[in-house]
Image (cartoon, rainbow, N blue to C red; front, side, top):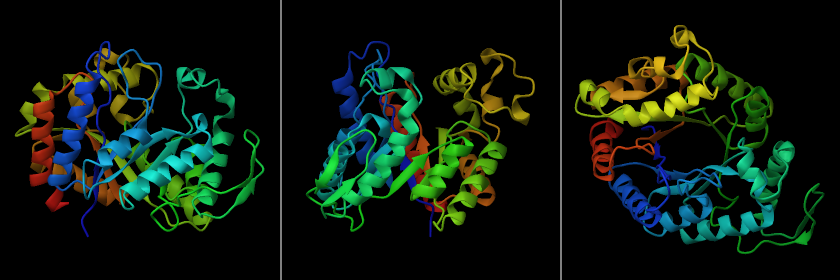
Length: 338
């Protein structure tokens, strides 16, 4: 069986968000091209109060794209669970699951940016417990049976969510957690775990072992979603030439402490020291289709993921047209050989 591949679009329109309507049209076209090119899923992230028009509604966007496609799975990656009333969330997701005939996936996390929480008046200190509650409540809500829940944050007494989800037990719930408590939470409660998209192979390998151990301890079948940034072109030299948008993103991650120290960062003291060549070492998927395939096969051997999710466009580029070309190139030259 080939490795299923999902796509993670850019949902930002810097600098001011003046072209959000056009961006949404482009995202829909990207999803349709992904579907035609052999991708298996299309997923949306979430942040709030950003000046660049960052799309803040991953559930809504999942439904929109779901109605513009026929086969590809749609979902969130990741939805900020603490910001939602879980009953409303259960209803919205169930409707999309029905409308897409069972193509909805719910990937969630606890969040980390204070402005996201400020927008809804939710204390960031409650994020973990709210998320744990949300997972419990969603699963009970999708049963279609009346239920009560002893929530710390909501009143849920003799509630019945209708319609039920199209998928018999509800959409799968994947969890993004990149700390020991997060890995434990994913292994204890979720149907799958999303690997940190920016860390190198040695770090992800350690995280994966921790997650699988937690899942097996709690009697859950591990499911690993490997998430990576990808720069693909006809040659490695072409990728280097168009790597600036990806490196702006990764230098931002480095500057704000998202990178876990590893052997590749030994000589990197400031963001400007981080070159594409360094970032591409066991971190990015980068190069010609053959080079991307070799790297992914290495990841498959070392990590044995159950799912792959790729991001090919950053806020700074490439252009929409080049992005579509990259999707088609990956779909034609790499996906059939995974």
